[in-house]
Image (cartoon, rainbow, N blue to C red; front, side, top):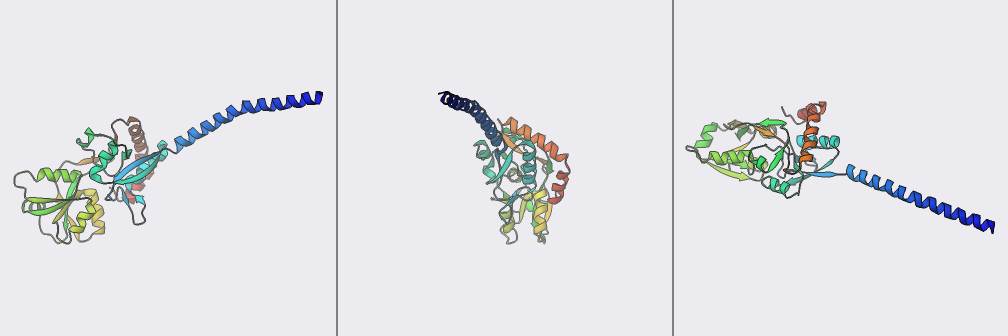
Length: 266
């Protein structure tokens, strides 16, 4: 009888210990799961679906690369989030951000006052001007290109497109604006004569001319320089703060200069 009582006491004791450890184990698991969820947070970065080298584009191997791609990945690593890149048609990229299909736009976007009415921009990290690229054997000046009925291509939804749309309405301007889904498509039409020139950011032109020796810059448009910035939704103050903090760290790190050298950005 004593042995039975002792055995029963042992069983009850072990059960009690198990009951005490179960909540502790459950709490530990909950903490671990919460930590893992936090570590695995993934934010979607919208990039120009037509490609926007050297800032963000899909290379021949199908990998998303570019200055802004590597920059925001570095920032995410420092600030506690991972980044997935999603190509989006440029003219629809801000609506995609507003609709929460993407979480940010880090893809060479000019932080214009018009766009700032719909999104919040990070601190600026680069400044660009607008130029006109023509065939290398073209004798026409920038002024002639704008006043003699030439066809000028441009990527729709860009700052350059808006500038040229406004410019075409001014007295003395005689050119036809042809809009494309990407700068690459415009540049494909330039050598075959479907357009006479293509407007774009100067930094994009620099990348284009590395690949196309049969083109040149005819001149710089009389337009204010624009700052590039990363865009987030108006109500996403926390993400904007993280991006700005991370951008500040990045620009003070040697990796910033390495990125600029890698992508040939002055």
